[in-house]
Length: 234
Image 1 (tube, helix red, strand yellow):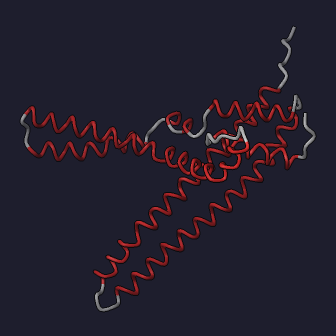
Image 2 (tube, rainbow, N blue to C red; image 1 turned 60 degrees about the vertical axis):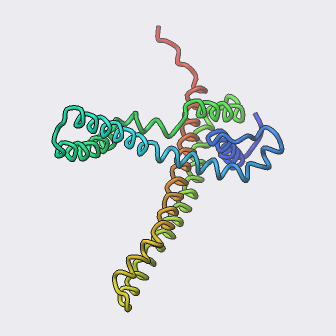
Image 3 (tube, rainbow, N blue to C red; image 1 turned 90 degrees about the vertical axis):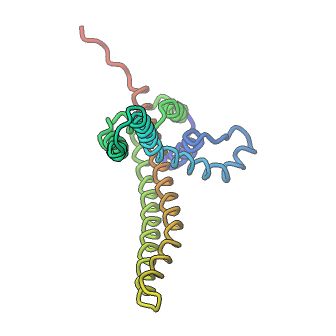
């Protein structure tokens, strides 16, 4: 076991978990050098994919239902009203599936058990067989997590400030010569930028959740592996 401080072990675990969770190579010096560029990109990508997965799933269900209803109406020569009803149904059903989805369909998608095991094995390699220190490492990780949360709050304040600026700006324009029409056009012009910013924030938050939860599960996994088996009662 390497003699390291708790802060060093925790920092090492976070850095190692970043490479594992976001699948960035750190096997050589070139990979470590390029990680400063590739890691933020892959982190954003992982968060975005995980965030959009339920939406893509809902869109797929909507498309299949709408396609089936369209062909059914055409084949059975039903009135056009059936197509309108079917279009509404195609929207409602995916929403019901997404809202009432079973926990296992979304709770388990944020962590990869194989990656968790890899992080846990690395932690065990650092701590040796001293399972009593795993809990201390987990406590230290939670302190780092507070720093991540504070940063997310800062980003959220910036985005909220941008929305407030747009509302005030639109209100000022609406009192001008062109009135409300000009205000609406200005808001529509600024909206995509704020929407993209919010998407980046949401993806960053999701990827941060993926990282922190993977580390926490890895700590629990290491604690589980290092826990001595109780002897059976005679």
